[in-house]
Length: 77
Image 1 (cartoon, rainbow, N blue to C red):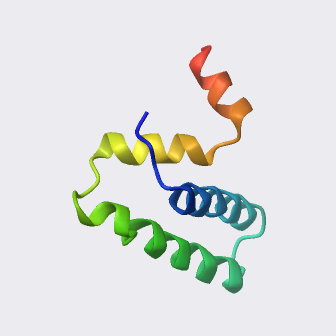
Image 2 (cartoon, helix red, strand yellow; image 1 turned 60 degrees about the vertical axis):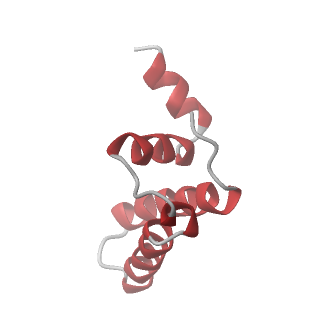
Image 3 (cartoon, rainbow, N blue to C red; image 1 turned 90 degrees about the vertical axis):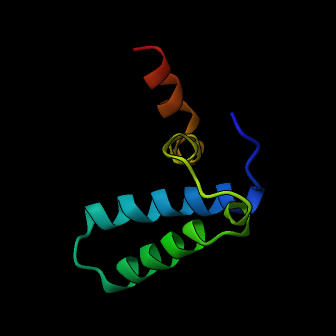
């Protein structure tokens, strides 16, 4: 796994939480706005300025945004 900055992983975790909330309550404008803001923060984070993210890097970051039990469950399938 790559070492991602703490604020980048935190933003990914917030993105996932917001996404799940929006899935439970579709049409909530504040959640859609929050998701859009977090998406921009993730994509334009200074970490990516040296190199654009590869698909593999995005998957690793997304895995860090999942709760530990979700990752463990996926690894043991």
